[in-house]
Every structure is written in structure tokens, then in C-alpha cells.
Amino acid sequence: MKTKSIREQDEQFREALRAVPVRNAHVKATPAPEDPRRLVVEVELLYRTPVLRFLRRLLKASPTKRYRLDLLGTRVYNMIDGRRSLEQLADAFAAEEKLTFFEARALLGQYLRSLSAKGLVVAALPGPGAPGSQRFQIAD
Image (tube, rainbow, N blue to C red; front, side, top):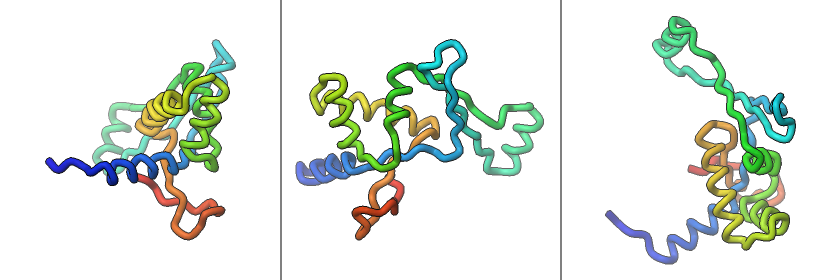
């Protein structure tokens, strides 16, 4: 297994900070009935193959998945505007919560990974040659 050099790790870190979290446009977010400060988010599940689509109909599986976000998850989800980078979000969160940048970045990174795994957000990198535009490329 090849280890990355300090320079490669530093570049990877800087690229992660430039990533812009973008909400999935197909997600429906509504206030939770028991606590309107929290969100219930619903995302459509993709059954890509005919066999999976058949099994979904046969088993009467739901075509959507619903998640209840806790208060912190709701705050993080609401902060995502598709314009601010992880670095900018971490700066704002650190100032609001009186955290260091590194604490805020770790906390936001954890929640963004969780939201991304659920299909609620995706990390995008600003497209080359388009610093002020909304052109993005999806980050791996």
C-alpha cells in the first residue's frame, strides 16, 4: 500500500475545504410533527435494474426513504445553500458555536458524510475556469 506524501495530503485537505455541499433537489424536507425545529427529509430510492424494480413491487417496498434529523443535523442541512464551501461553512459554524475551525470542520465533515451517504447532499468542486459561476463537478 502506497502512502501519500505530505504534499499530496495537504492538497487533498485543501481540495476538501473547497468542496461545496449541494442539496439533492429531489429531497423533500418538512418540519417534524413532534418538534418543528427538526426536519424530516424524504428521498426517492432508485431501483436501477428491472429485477430490483420487480422485487420492489412484489415486496411492496417503499419507493422513498425517510430520515428524521436531530437538531444539529437540521442546522447543518439548513446551512447548505449550494454556494458556500466546507471552509466557509466551518468558519460560520465555529463563530456561532464558539468552536475552533478544526472542531467545526470535524463536526461538519461528519454530518456531511452522513447526509451524503443517505443521498441528501453531494459534495461538488467548483468547475475549472469558473470561479464565480455555479458550474460544478462532482467530487469523488
